[in-house]
Image 1 (spheres, rainbow, N blue to C red):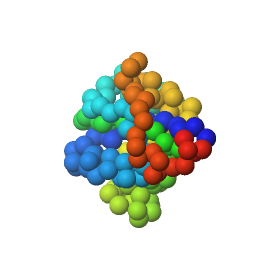
Image 2 (image 1 turned 120 degrees about the vertical axis):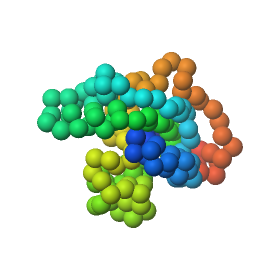
Image 3 (image 1 turned 180 degrees about the vertical axis):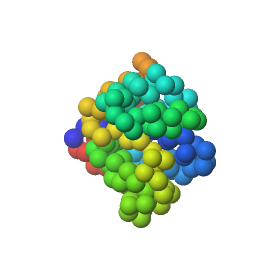
Image 4 (image 1 turned 90 degrees about the vertical axis):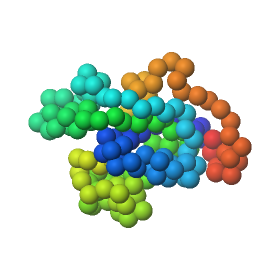
Length: 155
């Protein structure tokens, strides 16, 4: 089973609340590897590209307003079943309903201001990673810790 990559956005509320380090540490402690990371300001154009399937929906203006309200940290995380692992760690969309132990369950109270975005499939991850990271911005490297976080046939 080859390692998989996924996109995670630490949203404007995570940045404003100074939770980026804590959230990133959770992913690293889990054993996921950072393949890329940068801070950026999402523009309305970038929001429309990322959330293309939602642009015509009634809630989109609020979504765009929120995601463009401050900087985000874009992460490319890598590991076995990274998409599923990250989704589980994030918890349900609404922080009030998210299980304790998840990022949203421990740190969030809102449905909209829910701290993190994570790709919902391998296909979405490929598309989203290409939106946020250009050629040469994602790194492939060996880590001595990989032998301690997953078996060779899982990578």
